[in-house]
Length: 200
Image (tube, rainbow, N blue to C red):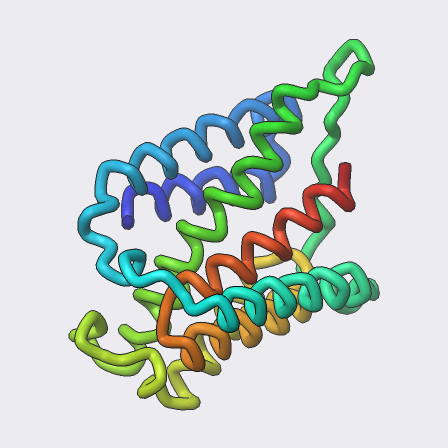
């Protein structure tokens, strides 16, 4: 995971420091393609993705994901922002909507990003903060300190930091309650999918 985490950080830094809009438009598909390729290459190592959630847990996760979406668009006051908002302009230089790029961004936001981020933030970091041999730790055994640190870091990684904290708390509770990584992935995917549709 470190190589594509480094790439994501690099892309984020470029964007925050005002890289040209054209560069950033096409950096996103490259980023998503790289992340997807690495997820597929290492898929056999992700043991937590083997057991599927119970139907009740999946429905709860979808509902929580939708609730996080509602809160995300509501938590938009100026003091809730870290830096300037980074929007996406779907129109190309000719003013027309670039639908292939819109589709790639929606696919990345709803399917690739939740999988990658939950593997990092919940499966790895949350448990690693509790004990270094994180793979042997049941999610339900994670303590308040580790959960708080991971949620705060997840929050400030987003421009809307308070919304990020709310989302991180929701996904962490889903993970600890169900003890399957698919529930925060599903909740995260629903949130991002609804946000992608809302923005479009």
